[in-house]
Length: 206
Image (cartoon, rainbow, N blue to C red):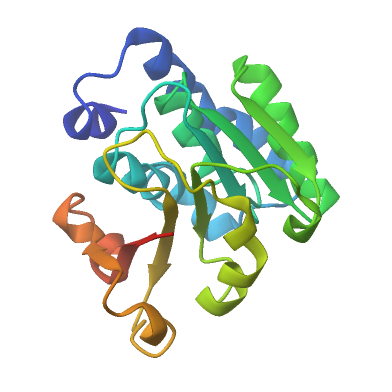
């Protein structure tokens, strides 16, 4: 937790308390329904919480912003972002019911009123959002096809509405069609742990 405060010194007591509860909650639920590998669970804070919060290093969502987390899995990046941005509304979707159950239980335990978690395929959604976030869920071409209709044209944030994607490795081929539009940031710019050396945040405006 001291690491979190060193990167985000302005977090209030309520957010810090919720972040402090996260690992214990996930250890409990992961023992019932496996959503995080044991190896990753041993590095839970770095691999899941800090990784998710790279998006908070890149943009500070204004109150009232709406965000869709596609293929949220066990709730990442959506739950850490929802703790960080309590006045932003998050819709977390995944097609696997047991993963959404964990998300719902963690959300309830934390009292996060700005999160809706649903077992759904993203193609079934009819709501529009300011941003779509995801973490290594699918190739860009698929994500674009699934979610382009889900992004509002008019935005209220410093950045135009679009996609914020946490990815790793060489993305040149995957993102060839957006080479001029995308902004690619190495997460090692913000976080010093070795885990982040190959990780990137990709912002693609609508």
